[in-house]
Length: 241
Length: 230
Image (cartoon, rainbow over all chains, first blue to last red; front, side, top):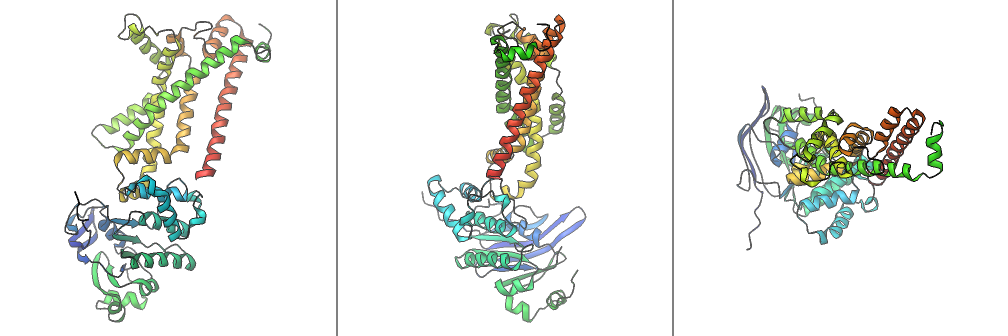
């Protein structure tokens, strides 16, 4: 029986809050993530960017409000993938890490070797295929994690400050892979606190401060005409706490 | 046999009876380690990954069972296998099979408890990543056991050390029958009680040397394979 592949988009948060004990980490967020150019979640450290991504992935449940993926709540993360700020490398070779991602995504065994090679090519790690993944440099590990995330053939790719600990060259190669993924039709949702990165990548911006949604809109608008004092201060380079 | 060097002379002369004792000791203890690993590792991983009422009590119990006295295990297996016991019909009391069973029971808690701790520690590191990849519960267990393989080698060695060193359980269920169920430890015990201290000491040194060699081999394997696969 043929089934139309169900889509995880739009990803809709409806009045979502997350509290841990007495601390409110996210406060009554309502937003919608739709297909299109990359969405960058920006804001100072501690604004709730990581928490928002974890909710979008379905790793944590909100304490109030509702999250739906393509109109469905509680759906398994089949069409979405996440890149953590410090991705965990399985204690295996580079190729085996990608192979693991493919196996978990249900890729038949006979197709895996070929797809592993293609994914490693895509992130520029073909030469390091047989290296232990944990011996790779920070930038190489991020690219490997990207290959492993792309192995899931995701519709939404969530990224948590993937370049926060990388030098400019490694940052550039990660950004190139992300842009390539965006061009191939994958919806990119990426947390960042780097204004330069915002200019280079963003189509749309979600600005968070102290757990609240301050702005959501096209990147150009946000950069030229911030409407909230928090966003204006952030763009000026002031310390927003 | 009262010559202090007699045990070494037995080795140098290729004494058949001595080699039979060494071979039996290794066969029994290594079989017990293999069986205990098959049971203890999945058990430990399962306990690491599941949450249920009474789990903490079970973890404490399992940790306590690492200190199970060999003579108590020997006695319990003896009662099970003796002619009037529930499994008396099997007729394996005073055979190497009974010794393997006793040692397996002795070291399952050791391997399970150490596996539980190792897998639980690795799970805190892997939890988000495996959850994001939607890995099934069985898949999680397999992944964690495989990725913890170098640390789990230590659990196996702890189990082997316990099995190779114990005398109480094999003495009771094996009976220390010359040429059939006599192991290094029961032989040492016997020679000591006979007053043949030099031979007992020599056998003890051989046992320590074997345990050392196996640990060195395991260490070498670990270093080599970590270099291969990280």
